[in-house]
Image 1 (tube, helix red, strand yellow):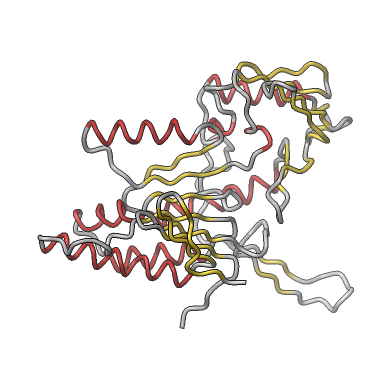
Image 2 (cartoon, rainbow, N blue to C red):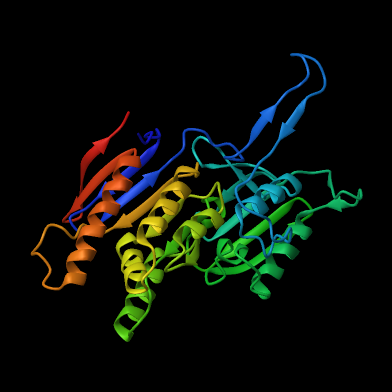
Length: 319
């Protein structure tokens, strides 16, 4: 029998199912194990850190796999950390920060007397250089976190002061880095326009992964501590069926990838079984498969919410 993990939320709508998977612990690694051979209170023993897939790089601008972020987190400090219980911004390299009254200037107070590994001083100028290089050269997934469309400038006004100016009010500098996995394919002009509108509606602060088939791999590659939205399951299922992929195997891998995550995860899916029986065999097969997939997600979910006319109606809520 499948064990229902506490902290998993599913939201179901007349048009949409949303699954939220939230782990109860915000450990830096969801797959760590330890074995101590030394006696309690004494030195010695062995600590084993395990991950589920392989590293490809230790370059921060190229990293995308979970183990890559695990290793980077051990070697680099963040401007801000994120509280593991609330996901609110917490002090990191920046001791504190303020936002201007118009919401368009963030000022970060950098910890003094920091040094690089070689002993050279580490200052706000180093942070400004890194961020501006990321924006100017469109480097890696970090680019989305710096919201280049809304960033006017990032400058060091003193060795311990970093100023980030935007052209619109934004909470991006202190907001958790959300990841959005999109499964839809832009097969015609109408769908292309819908996707463009959806991107605009999401606004800044999102990192987007487009994956129409290998959804389990995309989930594994998402930052392990980042909140994740997957939209949507029925588009993904349609892609699998039209491409003659093994649906059962793909769904099993996807569910396992959700079980391995610790951060909040929302999965959007359509409820297609409430209308007329489809006329075609393919349509009926799709309806049946969508119902089975939604059931599997609901079993694993901490909460299931049915969305009707913009209202969320609880279907399943675990304590």
